[in-house]
Length: 115
Image (tube, rainbow, N blue to C red):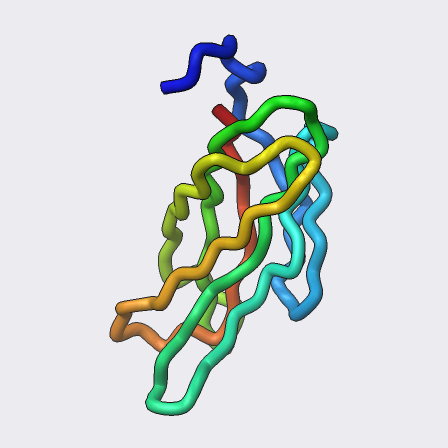
């Protein structure tokens, strides 16, 4: 754990949009979730990816909660991704291959926890 004080540990609610090139709006100006994508690759490999942007002057870790939806826009499940060591005034990418049997057709960021 780093020696700097907590960066206002808190849950940030997002006005989520799940399409390609989506940029998420958050209540805290220190963090922005960008380029959230859900892709189905050859071989039925399904991937959720995006970037965490740190607009503050302090490095932080972020936990991104992502909701996964089926073709009828019904919630299938949620998952959390830990994005560590997001540098000040910079971005860090995240990417997760989905290992699910359910028919996922889309993803949306629900929240992000900065610590």
